[in-house]
Length: 108
Image (cartoon, rainbow, N blue to C red; front, side, top):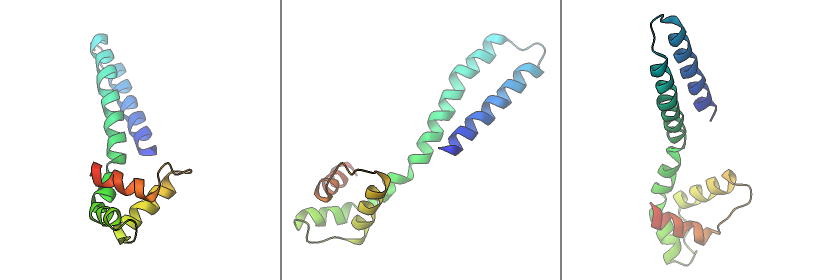
C-alpha cells in the first residue's frame, strides 16, 4: 500500500507542477485530469498490489480438491501454504480449513 500512496503523491505533484508551469493552461483540463486520472492510478496501484494473492490460491486448487475429497486427510503442500498465508494475513480466521478449501476450489 505504501507504493500506491507514493505513486499517487508523485502523480499529484507532477500534475500540480505542470498545471502551474504552463501560462496558458486551461483550468478545466487540469481539474478534469485530477478527477479522472488520479483515481484510476490509485485503483490500478491497489489492484496491482493485491494481484499476487490469487496466484497463491490458484496453485492450491488441486490440493484443496484433494483435501475436500479425503475429508481433510490429505493436506497437500500448496494447500498448506495457502492455509498458512490465510492464517497469517488475517488475525482472527473467518474460515476453517474445510471452508477455505471449499472457497479455493470454487473460486479459482
